[in-house]
Image 1: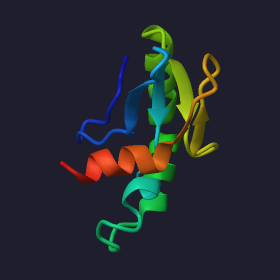
Image 2: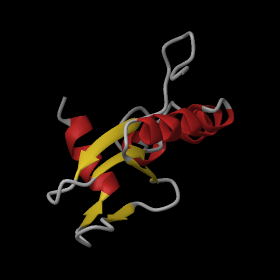
Image 3: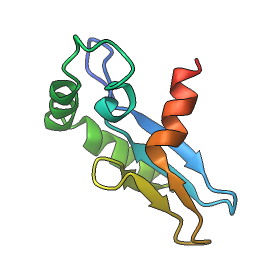
Image 4: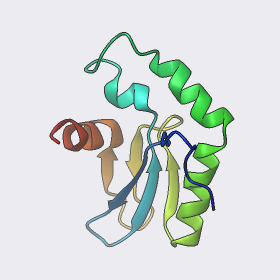
Length: 102
């Protein structure tokens, strides 16, 4: 299964495990994470559109399916509601905090 382009670019496919144990694989558009904090020179909408057009989001979804995770597309819903325990999570805030800390 191809997950990235030859130049190393890849859509953000992030893992999240709810406190109840439910596992998720989340596609998070880079513009949602980096748009307000990292170089405004980058056209994040174009980056995200290219990743979607190149099938990288589909690859993240296939990875979720093969690993038994629930796929969540944060471009369509930025809030995760766990179907098992109904716990809620703001995906952008959760992952932005972690990604910007490294």
